Amino acid sequence: MSNTTFEEIGQVLRGNQCFAILSHVRPDGDALGSQLALALSLQQLGKDVRIWNEDGMLEKYSFLPRAELLTKPPSTAIDVDVAVALDTAIQNRLGTTLAAVGSAKIWINIDHHRSNPGYGDLVIIDSSAPATGEIIFRLIKSQDLPFNHDIAENLFAAISTDTGSFQYPKTSARTFEIAAELVRVGGLDVGQISQQLYENYPRRRLELLRDLLRTMRFGEDGRVASFSLSLKTAAALAVLPEDNEGLIDHLRAIRGVIVAVFFEELADGKVRVSMRSKDEAVDVCAICQKFGGGGHTLAAGARIRGSLAEVEEKVLEEIGEVLKRDS
Ligand code: 5GP
Ligand code: MN
Image (tube, rainbow, N blue to C red; front, side, top):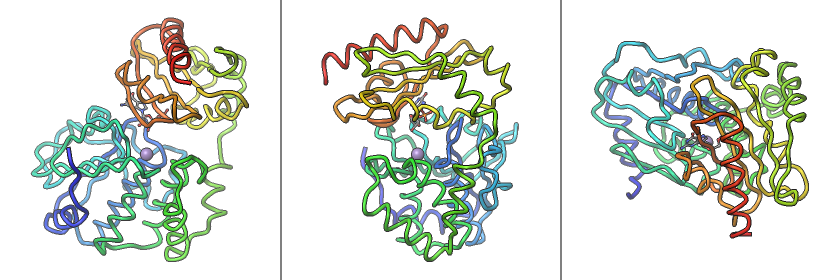
């Protein structure tokens, strides 16, 4: 599966009229920011653009410029010329937006997940990019597509969140150069955006963290740390799914921890597993793929059928095996 060129994608974007811009369920800042940025650029070109996510716009990201344009998909399918999947490692993670696209002449798939199999007609998978937002910036720039303050702010939020505020290992000189250009040309206020992203959490998120820390466990001589969230606790604290984004970083930040795991009981009889590694030799994407998930070498996830206790046991055992073998 080989990548297409930005030129070819640029031609398709310019040569068609009706677009649906989609991303994955349980979206993060990279998903939502990338969707809005590409959509706003296309709108400036005079295109008809629909921006759909199964979960709609999250409260947490509703400060993003033109956030109101991103909605849940309609229940009856709509035909478009071009459907674009962003930041979505596997097509079924598009959730209900997939069925909302009736017919599309062309499917474009732009992503930075190594595990992406390359579904669609025109594909750009760049696993060296720390965020899909970085690829969207390069597309806009190289094809001379419209760019303005609102697009810049959405891309900055995408890149900032997916790099853990420019900290994760894939953060490169190019990432800083792109961020600098977003700030300079887009006229961004970094302090203000960062405050919206990182200093504006609802109190219940910290209450959730307090409960999660009570369930914290260590294994493999302190190299594995995990905590878990039951449906009961989630209901008692009235947490939203988005509240737990980033809480796993508290486990990763512990000295000696190589693998951090977050288990979240879901209402459909599955458990959402979120995994982080601090060592390239311990590939959590490969571990998650064993359970039907995917992601990146150092950050991956899966949804696994079973009770919280069953899934915890299975997954922690597999991590133990890998640690014994690979590190
Ligand atoms: P998170 O732990 O933040 O939910 O996800 C970490 C990374 O793993 C993300 O890049 C995400 O796309 C990927 N990921 C999370 N859950 C799943 C899943 O169930 N299936 C696949 N294929 N990837 C996932
Ligand atoms: Mn991403």
